[in-house]
Image (cartoon, rainbow, N blue to C red; front, side, top):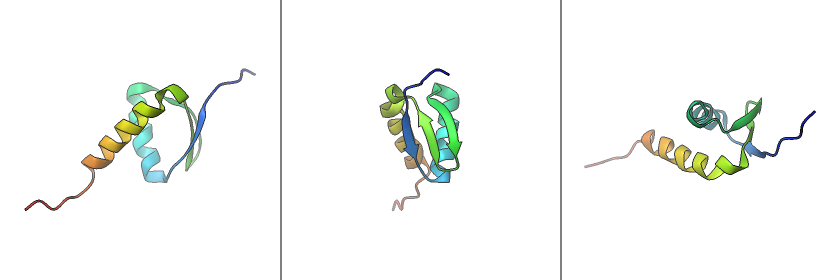
Length: 65
């Protein structure tokens, strides 16, 4: 068995679904462990954080008036 360097990510199920969608573009998830944990590539963490924040901003309701 080969060892793989990764970071353990804990998130809520909704954020995990967003990350799974983002993974289709950049392939940063090494292993889907359970409903709240992912093993991700450490060199993609900053990109993943930026993209997740961007997606969350798109889905945030704001009052403009």
